[in-house]
Image (cartoon, rainbow, N blue to C red; front, side):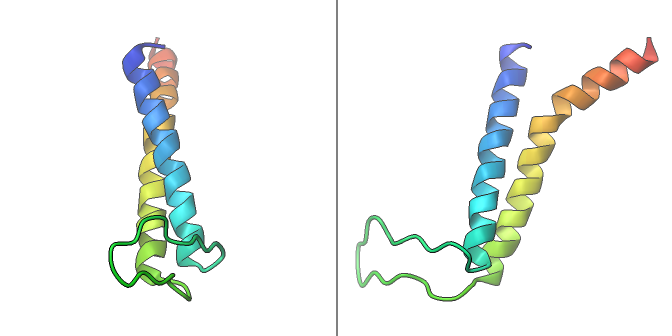
Length: 80
């Protein structure tokens, strides 16, 4: 595996995990207290449809990036 494929797979895994976290937060299954507050910092209560959708899109992009090198290799192998 070349360094480009490794970087693509690593980025895909990171994006997938981040997307899963956002899905869980958007569905109100995970609550994380704010780390750094500038002004009047309060935790968000209840789910957020915006974060849920953002998490789904991010996770799908991450999965696409992580799986693409293996699909391409299989397709090339089947042609030969």
